[in-house]
Image (cartoon, rainbow, N blue to C red):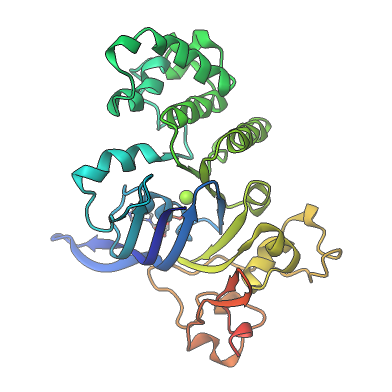
Length: 331
Ligand SMILES: Nc1ncnc2c1ncn2[C@@H]1O[C@H](COP(=O)(O)OP(=O)(O)O)[C@@H](O)[C@H]1O
Ligand SMILES: [Mg+2]
């Protein structure tokens, strides 16, 4: 069963300048994104910094309002709700419980004045998942939850500043899974952490993934990290999804030149073995304020065709379940 879908999702951030803060342009963070995720599925979202990954995650959980397009939420009973504009009262609490997000920086995301116990229990209290006579079981619950994320039960009485980045991310994970969400969105959950603890957090998320039927959206600029977690990978470039395929299919036969460039930049992926030429990704992505005409990737693409700077390629199926937006496949 589906959980969330988007159709033509667009998010523009206005740029204001001058004394009167007039809108003088837009950062085009998301351009017509069609996306869907179902129960139990893990979708990896990759692309260079600034391509719109976080904006996608934040728009899906309604931190940001979409500029246009449609977001549909399927509640646990299968009923659909158009949540693009507003989150109706009757669906708000189910939605807020069902869909959780953890962020890149565990230093910002935990309230320094609250104990770990209160931080982790807060979503449960908000959603009134405990009844009065269950008060005692809260201690038991928190102990189990902390153990699950690899933290000592004694930590419940402490405050966030007493913990390292990796431990704080564990606390954030405990908090987000406390309400048994159907979908957990992880936005670069390890990129603010020391390299030595990154894989521990990835492994913890993998364990949770295997033990539960939770769906995951796993956002990272690192294709290698995403590959090991995901059923399907979507590749973003300048606010567009340029390729979407099952992970193994993407690994074996990526179609988009941009994806191929990302892949050939990973030394351990041994390009020769996969018959992939070493493709260099040169320069920085262009500005999303003034994106290139036609295909957004054309200025950096070594397979550029004549129509590439004029016509934006449609997102088309190159194989069943494997989609790509590139003129090499639309001829
Ligand atoms: N709140 C915001 N206000 C204005 N611009 C934003 C905001 N959030 C993101 N952006 C811009 O939108 C683009 C996409 O950003 P983001 O979604 O954070 O990319 P990513 O997560 O892939 O690095 C960037 O150009 C970024 O500067
Ligand atoms: Mg980001």
